[in-house]
Length: 482
Image (cartoon, rainbow, N blue to C red; front, side, top):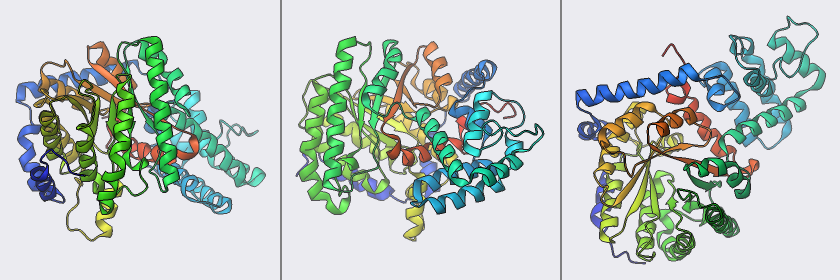
């Protein structure tokens, strides 16, 4: 299938940036990522005020933010929790899972991690994940967490522990996932939607492996669009919610090696989904994928946009700033929108597949990676990409994803006028910050995953790794020593 938009020049630029020298990329981006001194001081003051108010008013509760503040991923306990999650995700037989559970629970210092005062609920969560004294009460009040664990293991065995950890993982899933079905998600979101909060619903799936998988995911998307649209129409909410579509869920061979087949088979499917959404004036965002699929996603999007209703400007794309090609992707999308005489929305995020991209580069023996290797380099690239997006507001509605107060304040300083700008957070993350932002007149949106608990662990582990790292803003925000 040919694409009338002349994309070859843009794709040549993308190819040149793939695995480009990291230092050279950053040197070019630094001017766009830097605010004048006075604007930077104002942004720092605004971000600092938000953080100080969150620390002053925050009440410990059973939330992911509190859990991450208690169990950092660089601690023995945090690493143990992740190993346990990975055990349930990747180990098919119970005996091996039980052995790993015992090994990881024995080596961590839960007494120290659970000391220092916290809400009963968060201690309860710690017990559910680590089986300390809030669930199993020993007769001896002075018994330690370690002795409680040994007592439980000897009395009940690892199957009890395994089931308790499953309960705890389900609790964590409820924090990150809006609902197991789109009906439950809409019910949970209704009060916020009535207040003008917009949602972008994502039907969880890690990619289709067979044609049957792709057909099932397509039905999920179709049903979700119909139900979101009907819900919106019935309640007449101030701002329409939308849906995020993962293209790898709609085709079992979504890869560049199957380029012609994908374009031949997928474009009509995506056009039909967009037309379905357009009937409800509902935005559709093509979600980000691994870097190997980036050009393919852009080609599919370019072919689709030509066939969409002229009066619907709801198509959007997610761009990951950790990819060295991100600035060129924004240029491509702006040119594509101008070529077709329509507006699109672009959601800028920092990136969700960093571990996968680094691993693939190492497996292939590449001297350079396709993504930035340090978090602060990604932050710099994000700020530079934000300026690029804001410079294309004639055809792009910018959406900025993230939970970092300084990033938000930086973007506000760049934009000057925040009209038409939206800030997006993950469901279960950054709620306190976004409440303050809304109070200051900034528009917020929530990325809301929907899916059953048996398919969400891949998504859940990525979110915990992303936000539980010691360098993440979410992890550090409540630490008054920082």
